[in-house]
Image (cartoon, rainbow, N blue to C red; front, side, top):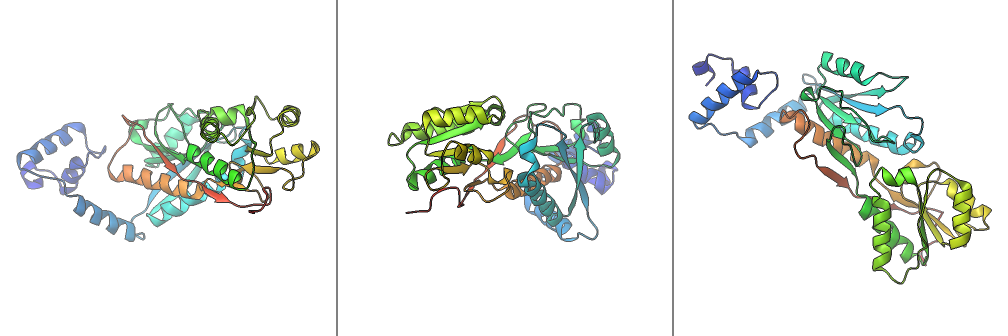
Length: 332
């Protein structure tokens, strides 16, 4: 085919794979001729070539970027969760022949426009956007040049493929576990932004589980506009939950200031043990596995020469694991 069209084999190969390096007119010509001669893509051959590239790390190496936002309010994401997600992504990239480089967008980092120039200049085609406290805006990146994945639930500027924990399933796991431990009155306590940024998926799953288990008598959930010991203690004293389910480990101290003894009289279940220091009972959202899965998805896009904003952005979820800890009573 290359000889017939008077082109190099590389040009024909890249045109058949819709590589953006080949101009659209050439791609159209090559693909039209391929249809005429009955050419069909062979996925087995493609997978073999991908394996060759993967195992020849001394001669083939790509660069991917992880992008984080500098956010003063991003306190929860400064913990082990962010670090483990980044580590999982870096290790998976290394296994697949890629190096991961970190960029921070903000006053102490670079602007989105400057980042775009750096990525294009260095030929970096894959970007992994790290979890952000607020919904991130990366519309100013030249997305025709990049494949992108967001390692959290929702991004709409632009709408990319995402990978994140399975929050509803995780809440069901937490509720089932505290029920098995004998708690009858579980109380959900969240910061409003912690709930809103996930489209209230924690709250919805909590309410659904409570509705389906009438033997439980949970109080009205506490959704605080901001972190407030005063609001929490007022709610705790009024509604008397026997176990609190939430993000913030400081709630244990507030419970104790109300007379609770954890875990003797009351319990605390963390919906994300990776956001706190110290040993807690609760959910391991597997950030390392999320990082690995995000890189798998990103490199798959690159291998298929997909760049730009997807027509149908999809969300991939990773199941949580349960972690025993000293903040809940022991199994009877």
